Image (cartoon, rainbow, N blue to C red; front, side, top):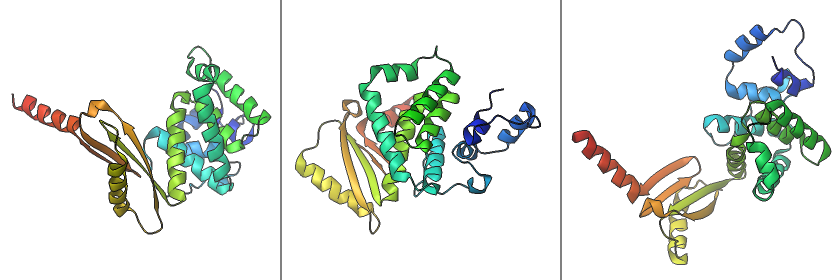
Length: 236
C-alpha cells in the first residue's frame, strides 16, 4: 500500500507495526478534512483544524479548509494564496502543465513526485507544494482550480471582503451595476467590503443569479421556467 499520508507528514513510510489494515480502519474513522490536515502537519500537537471565517463545502472545500488551517498555523496564509494565484494563472497559459494534470495515462505517484520536485526547486511555500502533491496522490488534480477558488474565497472573508458574483443574461450598464452594488452592500456586516464581479450567461434568459459569500440565490427566468415545467410534468 502506498503510504501517502505518513510520507507527506514526515518523509518516512509507515513503520512495521502500522499495517495497511490498521491504516484503513483508522482513516475510516476520521473525517476527510482531518486526514487532509495531517498531510500539512509535522507534529500531532498541531493537527487541530483552525476554523475558517466562512464554511465551504464539498471535497474541494475540505482541501481548501485544511490548507487554510495549515497555512494559518505556519503564518503563511498570504504566501500560499500568492502561490495558488500564480499557479492558477500558469494553468491558463501553460498547455503542457494543463495537459500533464489532465493526462490519465500518467500514474498518480509520478505526478506527485513531479510536484515534490517542483516545490523543492522553485520559491513555492511547502504548504502549497504539499497540497499539489496530495491532490496528485489522491487523483484529485482535476479539482485543483476549484480548491484554489475556495481558498481565495476563504482568504477574502479573512480580510473582511465578501466575494459577490452576479450572472445576467446581458451585460449590466454602469448605472445598473452601481445600483446593484449598493443594494448588495446592505447584506454586509460592519467592517466588510464587497468584491463584485459580473458575468454574462445568455442561457439564464433573464433575471440574475447572485452568489454572495457562501450564499446563492437563483432569480433567473431559466430557473423559473424549469420550476413550472417540473410542476406541469409532475401533474401530467
